[in-house]
Length: 70
Image (cartoon, rainbow, N blue to C red; front, side, top):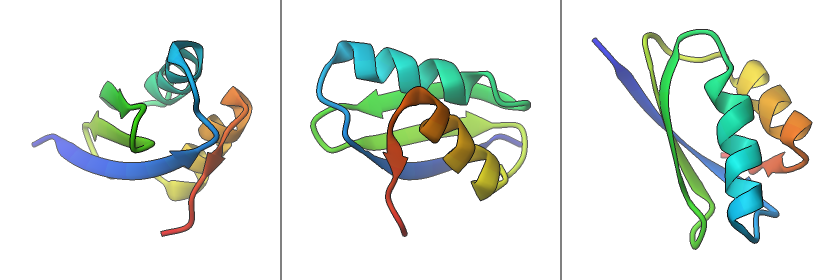
């Protein structure tokens, strides 16, 4: 059963930002879909299983942005 998780990413300002974050998160093992709401900074990730927050944080960092603390 798919798992949907929401994260807030800070620093995104354009479609290039959305593409970078989507690409990095989409490359994580088990991720099926990534949707980014640029206006709110909310990223919705659908995956096969719960994701490790450290891996999500590292992917967002690799894209050049920051995962907001929950």
